[in-house]
Image 1: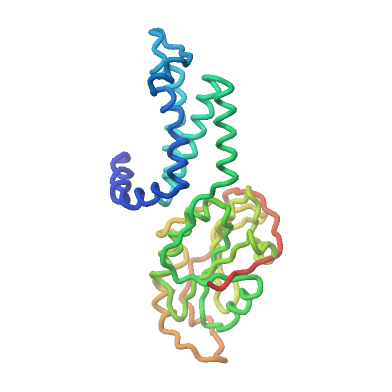
Image 2: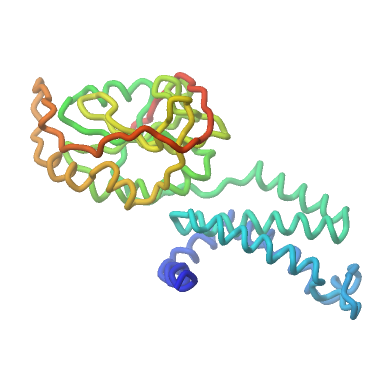
Length: 307
């Protein structure tokens, strides 16, 4: 059953997978992922390769190559257990396929290993995964607009994602967050995004680490009456982020979105009205994080660009 579930999920999203694979980034990644297989199996090329097989067949994998491929396949399966989108599943497969290719090429011929590693570095520096461009009800905020939007109407609840375009986790989460905004956006519940990679001062103000090693990207923060009420992932007293899975189910449950939506959509906007705590539905009580995460040092700057 554990194998059937991901298989059914893959088949269900197969049309979407084809659409992604046809994009230049994924086409190039696919060719790089199967590079060693192509070299080892192409007649006229594989005949000149070295091999440790007893039968001397240089056009087939030897026992060590099979062992390396099996080991990295196990790592991919472990990583994909925590993947929440098809993009993450495909990304993990591509990433570890390239790692396997580097190891196998270096083992085969150091010159081929250096050439392939150079190609991987150039590809990493020049090509980025395509950004989510689907429908959404999200307001992009900047350092000059975030405070105005949060304080404009104290009855409006905001869920704000602090993200960075360079973060693979943020890129994978984009479609999930967009889907939530389509389902729950209303007059009293708004969704926003702030690129702390672009507006660095906001990261310090809202204590969201923008470090490449940070476990806080993305971060979701709930604001009610212009004040922060809760966030995920949580940060413990030592400033370390607690690991948390950004699945749609987790977000709906932790942020009490169903009840929040039902109450928020009834709000009729009137200027100058003050908010009372009873206007908001109760949220789950915050518990003190127990699990260790990653240290962070906040940097001040936050902003969002109106879309």
